[in-house]
Structures are given as C-alpha cells and as structure tokens.
Image (cartoon, rainbow over all chains, first blue to last red; front, side, top):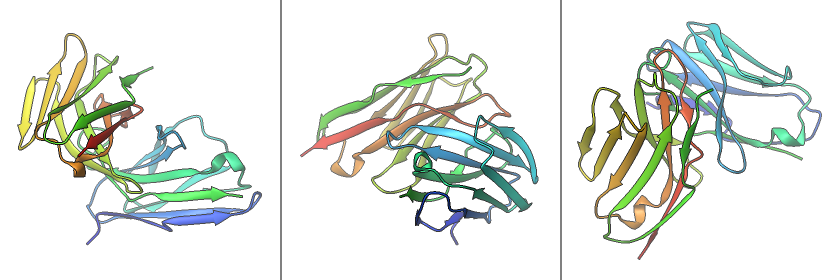
Length: 113
Length: 110
C-alpha cells in the first residue's frame, strides 16, 4: 500500500547509456514532481506535472525527459548519461500544485560510472 | 528567486531539546514544512504550518513561525538518538513546488 513508489531503488550504469526511472502514486493526487538530490544533499525541483501536463521545467538538460502517461505515473527518462547525473532522484506527489504537503518516494540512487 | 536558508549542522546531547532554524525570502509563502531524511531513506513529512499561524505543536515537535522576520524553527523536545537525521525546511507559495533549504544534519550524542 505504498503511497509513492519509484523503481528501481538503485541504478548503476555506464556513461552514454539511456535509462528510465519509474514513479507511481496511488493517492489520487493531481500533481507529481521529480526532485534531484546531489551529493551534498541539496534538493532541487526538476519537473512538475499537473494532470499529465508539464507545469514546471527548471533548468534541466534536454537529456532529461519526463513522461506522464496518466496522472498516477510520472517517469523520468535520461539520455546519454553523464557522470554528473549521479544523484538520488526523488519522485513526489501532492493533491494540488504546492497547496498541500507532498509525499515522497524512497528515492532512486543513480550512479553513472 | 525564492531562497531558504538553514544551518548545516547541529549536535545535541540525548535528552536535550534541539532547535533547528530556517529563514526564507518569499513573502508569499503560504505553507512551510519540515521534512526528515534518515540515512539512505526518502523524505518524510514531519509537520507543516500555514503562514497565518505562529505556532504548531505535535507531541515532541514544536514549530514556531515569525512571519515578519520570515523565520521558522523546529524544536524537538527530549531528543533521542533516533532523531539523528537531516531536517529540511521547505516553503511553498501555493501553486508552486516546494523550495527546500540545504538541510540541517542533526547529530544526537548519547
């Protein structure tokens, strides 16, 4: 009965590969997010989707492409992975954009070697 | 743009109170949050406060908000070793995503 689940939990891959991280929420929330947490634990918003539509797109390389097939899912696809992409990526959801607390997934630790 | 600042480290003895401070710049902040991140784990919402409140208490946790100074604090009474974690302050102006501080690493000494 996990509220926000993301897979995989760990991902180790080589530079230049393409990978995806999946996220699903069963809370019936309208808004989903991707956050990146770097090695210094700094958390930054990357994308925000509301009812499958992109509403926030921070300064993120074009190699990152979010996809929302329905409002319960927000997947993150990364092309041509670079060493600097190594981080923990958190998916989150909230009832509405910023109006109530966000529930976070457990994170996906991506390591690019 | 919005900015949220908090000190990076705090060390307290078990049984003492911990106070983690946070300042923010966005005067239109509507919600202010405290999240806890334990080692290797995701973010857990601890508590939040609306901007029209100045205090909220929940068991060992007390949140104080000084809206005039844009200052938020989290007090943990009777701090335990299990409270050791990184605590993130975050704010939202309503229809915007959360803006996080850099996190305060709380170390509890037995």
